[in-house]
Amino acid sequence: MGFLEMTMKQDAVTYVAGHAGLIGSAVVRRLEREGYRTLITKRRNELDLQNAAAVDEFFEEVRPEYVILAAGRVGGIMENQSFPADFMDENVAIQLNVLKAARKTGVRRMILFGSSCMYPRECPQPMAEAALLSGKPEPTSLPYAVSKLLGTYMCLAYNKQDREARFIPVIPNSAYGPYDNFDPKSAHVLSALLARFHEAKVTGAQSICLWGTGSPRREFIHADDIAGACVHLLLEEDLTVEFPINIGIGEDVSIKELAELIAGVVGYRGELNWDSTKPDGAPRKLLDSARIRSLGWKPRIGLREGLTETYRWYVNHLKTAPVPMQVGGDNRTGAQVSCA
Picture 1 (cartoon, helix red, strand yellow):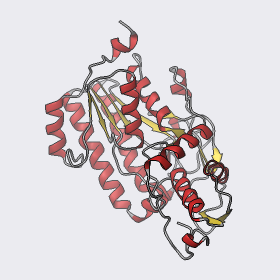
Picture 2 (cartoon, helix red, strand yellow; picture 1 turned 90 degrees about the horizontal axis):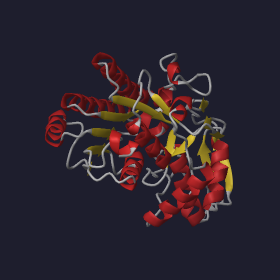
Picture 3 (cartoon, rainbow, N blue to C red; picture 1 turned 135 degrees about the horizontal axis):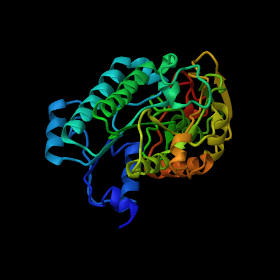
Picture 4 (tube, rainbow, N blue to C red; picture 1 turned 45 degrees about the horizontal axis):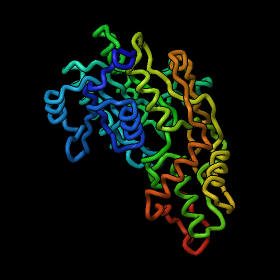
């Protein structure tokens, strides 16, 4: 019997929450490719994770051995600023309900996703896990950061009190790939830029206006690499979880460099303008992923390769590209695509 079968049997009941989203769908694809046969998924109309009674009933009935919690409310700066209470309410409820039910029913291992925005705004780079709570997070993403900090430290508290390492909080850096949110009004920067550049190319816009200065640096990791890291952790026999575990590729780019790279992948030839009156967010977010690399995992998908594959998926799966929010200027006639 191989190592994979010894530690996580092929018929192990595995629940992937948020299976239709960016990371959840990647986890499902990875587990299926590895030959796991008993994957449980539920859409929101089948199981509302904010409903504690429904979550308890589901866990008591299904008794999953492994859980990957990829469900939750996510979004960029605009979403965080517009709906701070909703971000905290929904994410806190989902995390607590699933964590409590998983602990009660004796799951073998559970992965919960934190976020790099949990780190202090001013933080030594690359950011090591021990730097959490050493300073204040970036204010523009504070609601999401606080909610994910709660879930992360609940995992660590359960492990400490129960003297086990069943709950594994991970911190992937900015994720992208198929099944991402490409709505420019609510998406994260990479997918929002991809959608807006595609729209600008289709409409013949001569220029596009982007938020901020373009100087902040970000690390982007493909969802398939995150899924590979998660499966790797589920299979790791001698895992210690005193801190959450960073998942990154070890390289970052400026937002300006990212925009230029996406423009090239999409084939947009217009002018890029930057609105420096809009917020930049944290100046840099590069993760120190030495711990997970020491366990034998490493990323496989480079940024240009991942962007090309993601754009191909986007074009093939969306009949009409999302239209960026109009704030003056008609991008259907080739005028400036307005900032959003």
